[in-house]
Image 1: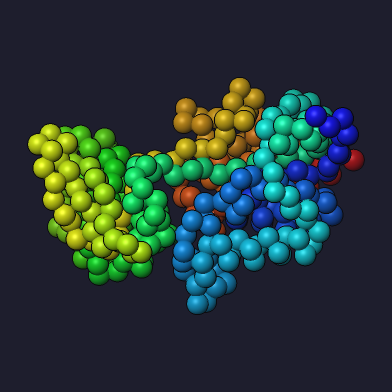
Image 2: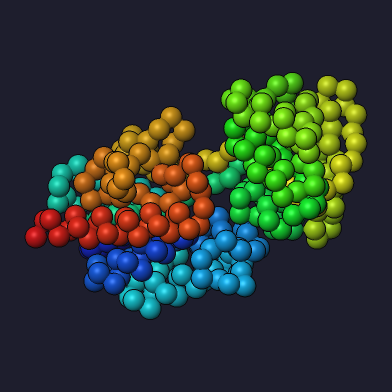
Length: 315
């Protein structure tokens, strides 16, 4: 393990729209930010082929290209973007305290401020065909990708409020939405269940799971299986939306930062401040409601401004 300690004014942990936007603002404020991207440079959006709802891209773009644009913009103002993984943290609970971080288990860093933008990871079914067709019709975000299936038939997998919300959203733009529920009941709130049941072009199949997503390069259907009778049947669809939840990437901060029962970091009021001074959270790591690139970017801006004001208060 290296004995050399690097001292940094602003450390950004994680990339994606939140991290890169925080970097842009922090760099322009002369905070000389250093970003460690994590193992998935650019975050979840790099798994999305088309992005049509981010302001400024009048003809749309794709997730990887957009993240490269944001990365280059952050670097243009002086951000140092590094590929690496923060493996442990020792965060100070004192105002003006120094936060100690280890990267890749061997590099020591001391940071005056930290912006956490590690995001959340969508849960998937674990099927090989699902992974292969990611970006070719398989999605974990109806709000992001539903527009591309306008007038078509799609499947939603899930039984909670998220699945019900995605199904009703898709029903407004798609021809038919089939919801696959693993058990014989939905976990969604009664209000959401009523909304699903009252929507004419939504069909709910209980005790039903996906056995395989069909198609070579794009989704052409799903083979569904009734887990009681073991009978299978094919549902011709062009889109498959997995709505079984997200896992916030917050394990590194358990027992250190305040988080809710599901692991999302808790921020104070309308700020990005965590319970520890000089530590801020932006993007999906603290937002389980919206989970959009544009809202993540907004909180990245907020986090950089909060960090700048915090440093200013120490002078």
